[in-house]
Image 1: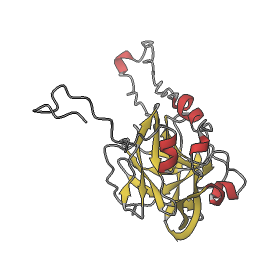
Image 2: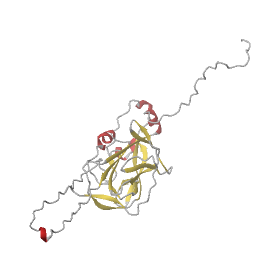
Image 3: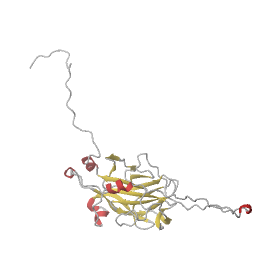
Image 4: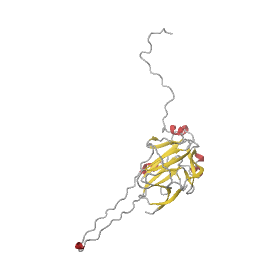
Length: 275
């Protein structure tokens, strides 16, 4: 398998404390609202994960490697690769995280030192729509790859002189350490293309992610060889306004109408006069 040049998180990357509600198995993913300074709660509906985006608020995608070995995370927002700006493809470059390492992806990468901040905005103002790709606005995806293990060199001691004439069969080298690629793409890959809901009339304009202010985010290049062609895990998080998620049935709000009181068998102590 060819070696790929990927973007590695700088050693100065901060340690991120993620809540138990983080999405993912190999890696934990949370969406952090930078204006409210809180991790957005995740709503689960029909096996999918949703968050509420607040228009105008900047956010970051917080990643944490749960493994004891390096992983590669290829990140997309609205169907667009956050590093290259191309239409998302899990074969693209990504962020390499060391064992138990965390990193916050705060925006579209402009260079090894700068990013343009993510912020929730109306669909026409989204980076995807402004670059002619509005079809997949409203979804964040992370494809996670394990690193191909280094080959193990087996040492064979020289034969003893007393047995030098014996024909010994070499020990079988059963080094078949191929990890079967999990078929996470079968469900998450197809579900990342969200269908248009039937009750669109009850919804407000869809949210997307804008191309915001420039800020410092330093990374370096490194080399990473993937263990498998397909990702070991694909993490998908959908986002929209609170109103739209209520209209889709993702968020169930309690009814504000007071229910009719039930009739009581013994409502009064004495019999009143009739009207």
